[in-house]
Length: 434
Image: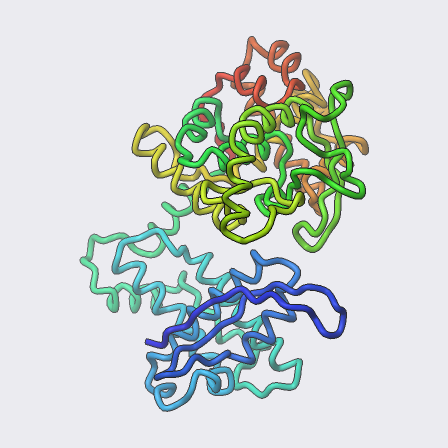
């Protein structure tokens, strides 16, 4: 099987003069490493505004290339020619092979939905090639590239190829289990406490608490400065800031989709950040940064790991998953679905409880108020605010109902920063369908 390396490329775009970040694919062939020009041109064009999107696209293309490298008709060709040789049937065979491997392992992953979505990315890749003048054998306009796993004939074929026993789980059963595992939960107070204890490096626990209070994405957290400039010139360690305002505005630049937005951070969350990370760890880590890199740590960088290396969205995700595994080992009730990104669901849920108060359980909350919608747009950075609003109103209602008899206390204390609020809720598992 072909070995493909994925690497983040950072360089200055000669046309715009701006820094560009995206993944690139490098094929290992014999003694050579070959940049796969056509996939890389696609990744530059389609994913340079979001490194997360670039990671997903590059990973899917890499999986597809590795698969077709095992097929007979590709064995005589270099990987740089794969885009010109592939056709619709190759894409379909790739999907079937993934389903066969999944059924053979009796695994819920990847689900049929994931396999379908990945195939659409491959079709998007070939569509880009076709429309930009590169010849391919893939016709994106026809539907023969998509494998429909609800058809009995294909189901039977997959089951036979996987060589599973007659009473083994089939595709439909595995998909059902996968959907059950994907049910949307709001992380509860006991899970938050345990999750925070399971981070081996306190910087990630600090970042998670700040995310709970702000709804910032990992990519936004990693860009949080020690001392801000421009619109963020007032951002600095809390001990040096004005203590009067209850909240402070913070402008996030180049977030998802290369967007800029201004959010609100509660002073309690900034104080917690100062007390639990800056005062205890930042100076030591800044010295390690200087020793490692040979120069002072820029004031634009706040979050450093134990080795003095700036935290990245990727390390945040991996450390979050490691903390989850540790928490699950300590408490079998800690849910597998929980990850670092759950903080994004926490903030809007709590905001809507504060905004509507007792009216949340009435029809008044079914209509989105303009002021409420604008806050969600600014804080969350979502364009489709109606969908966001409807989803989190439902989740907030579940929290309110789970805290029946304590609603007044819940509302009264919910604006004192996330740390005080965690102590107020005693609800169990809050279930929301995707």
